[in-house]
Image (cartoon, rainbow, N blue to C red; front, side):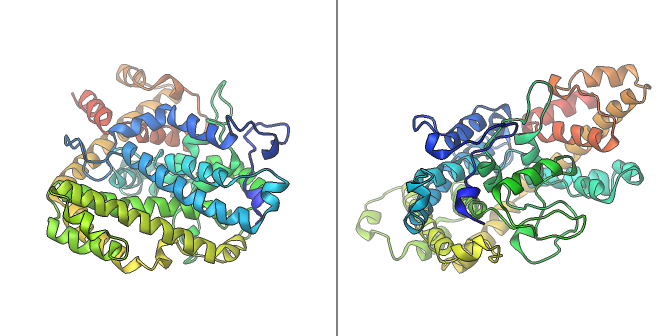
Length: 444
């Protein structure tokens, strides 16, 4: 892979080449990507979607929206630092093509901003609830009518693939969704493969899948434009990662490791003594002990350590990326950046404690259980109504229920897979609160 191709400004539907050197510095194409994401309704819905603590009324606990903003900020910093090194190593990128270090930051910031945009309500349990509706619930009845890959898309519903669809799917009058640059779409896609074969290798790019069967042809177009390296044979589609996807992933890993931990501390799920013991290990080389001792509140002490920890992890991620940049461009680096971090043991310790004290806390488990029931019920009601309407046997109840669907989902879908995916997409775009409300309506 080569950087001048990987930094493509092309958008879906373009009929002419977009050159960086011709871009207006007042409104760079990669910055337009960020703007389009942040003004989208799908991004706004993240303000009422679970990050760790579902439906928390505590104002300092993160939602998917605040998490995404923070990942974007961290991603921008990592991207700029990497961009500076890349431009220094390959001066022709600036001298001939007009690229700047901030372009890398802008791409990573936009992709990171959108990294959770396809996640269903109620956190990762939302993905599992959709998948299990089909694998062990009433949705099993559709299996014999779908291909193996279409079925796999449903039984292991993936927020990353749904996010790619949110960003790129066309509808009447709206060609190409948000029409983001291909560079941003490449950086967004952590798992550039279809749902089968499942985990064919230990390559990090094969851990999950990144696009539905309905989006496969467009993803191939994006990957080919970017010069991504194909790593599958026959009828299977898969690629080595866009290099900047490693930076988006690192920003997410850093934020959920440190900031979810901070939420747990502020909620009292993790004691301050534990917090200090774990965070000090990450910051012992950079902490200003005199400054730290002047901080009188727990919140200020934890905030100071959190900022230092994130800074150290950013610098380490940049170091790992630059050291492995040539292997990454050849498609020969198969790990996350944090897996190769000098702080990996410390991060693993924090995550282990978070799993025990935060992710498996009673409040989280109770909300995830209710989320399972709500999503299962909504899927069953809306899929039944939508299919009955398609088959010309809709009841009055079905017709009333379909009126709840947003106008953009009032689409005729001839294919069963497309109909099922449309309803899954509708459910996935609900906020936690809206899902609860709709569930009350359909069970009244």
